[in-house]
Image (cartoon, rainbow, N blue to C red; front, side, top):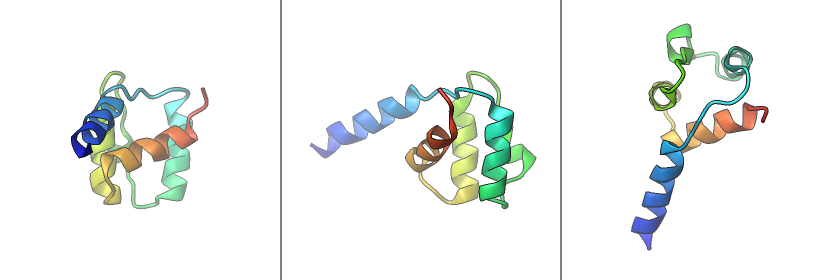
Length: 76
């Protein structure tokens, strides 16, 4: 059962895409988490997981937590 949960979690992470205006989202994240710097928030299309891993390390949070934080700030 635990393996299925891990597989589902990894799949949802792999499918993660940035929606909306990243510059605005990055500004809001910087306000909420002042320890983030420009390098942490740099985003290149198609490299969402690179961004997630940098933020995960800087915020000391798991990748899934970072994805949820980003998703909350996205406008569909």
